[in-house]
Length: 150
Image 1 (tube, one colour):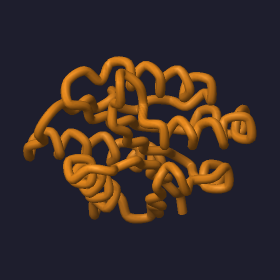
Image 2 (cartoon, rainbow, N blue to C red):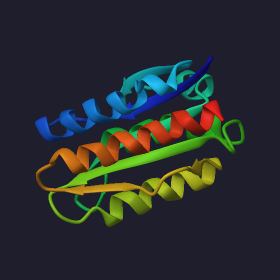
Image 3 (cartoon, one colour):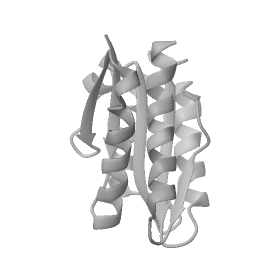
Image 4 (spheres, rainbow, N blue to C red):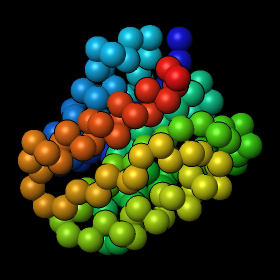
């Protein structure tokens, strides 16, 4: 069985709705055979990363950057996992009040260093979420799982 690690920092109601959408996408009935581990960024460890076959990342855009919690996750796990996770699929979802560009680019620099493969464009959400934006997040997460089934 393949496993997806969903690493998230969802401190607000908006981000929790997005997290639920990501979890829903990973639980799609056509993705039977995929295990999912949803772990807050501050609790995720290198063991979580190394056990997973694919990744979904969720962060708010804070002051033009990823959240401190996700940055702390990468700080703790980067060198231990470097070289061990190359080629694995991932998707990124970022929510901000307006501009998410800096947060996306900061995460993409790290995932590039790890050698992860983006299997969907980063989902950049601003302001209030609606059914369409939540569906886009769910689809990106499901795409990671679908790549593991292929």
